[in-house]
Structures are given as structure tokens and as C-alpha cells.
Amino acid sequence: QVQLVESGGGLVQAGGSLRLSCAASGRTFNSNPMGWFRQAPGKEREFVATISWTGGRKDYTDSVKGRFTISRDNAKNTMYLQMNSLKPEDTAVYYCAAATTFKSMMTMRSAYEYWGHGTQVTVSS
Image 1 (tube, rainbow, N blue to C red):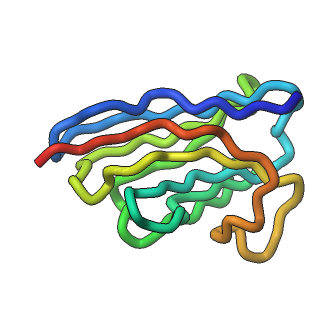
Image 2 (image 1 turned 120 degrees about the vertical axis):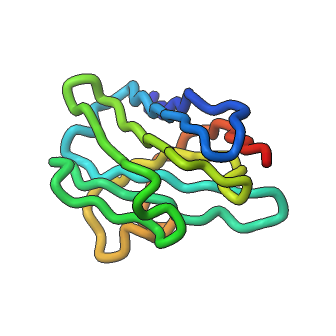
Image 3 (image 1 turned 90 degrees about the horizontal axis):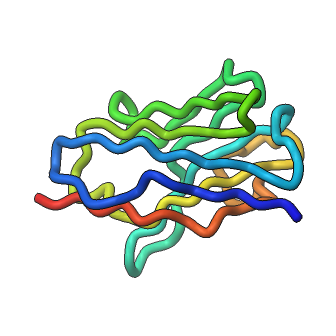
């Protein structure tokens, strides 16, 4: 059974940092693109960042560029999201996702076949 499990969420003050992890089990995703999405209350789930299987290509939504860094450790079958200079508007449930193959629009939810259950990130002002 394939599982993606997020961890590292929590409550932090504005300007603070958190590091999210996404551990995969049941299969390896070393050759697969992966990504992070988030969903704030009352809003659609939105793209945050994506990383190629080598880690050589990374894309971010504009609102997190310069503050968030996506990375992966294929030896550990784990992906990370380092979040710095957090803002109250970053408050959301953060989901990790994995795709079976590369697609032309890795910023779209439909590009990913596997999803975690999410971890809550709350940023207080």
C-alpha cells in the first residue's frame, strides 16, 4: 500500500520557520516528480512547489518564492519543504503529492496520483 505521510506542521509566529517532511512508503518515488500543495479554510487546494525526480528542477508559486525551498532525499524516499519568513496567509493544511510520470503542468493537482493526508500549518500574527 502506497502511503505519503506529512509531518512537521505546527503553530508558529509570523516571521518564523517550519520544515515539513513527506515520507513515502509502499513504493519508491526516486524516479518521480513530487510536489507540495496547500488548502486554506474555505479555499481551493493550491499549488505551492514541485521538484523533479533528480531535484534539478524546482518550481514555486509566486507567493512563496524566496521564502520556501523544496528538496528531496531519494535515499530516504523523503521530500521536504523548508518554509522561512512565514506569514499569516501561509496558514493552511499542507499536502504532499507524487506523480507517476512527468507531465507538462506539474503545478496542477491533476498531475499527481498519490496524496498524503496533510499537516496543519498555522502562522499567528
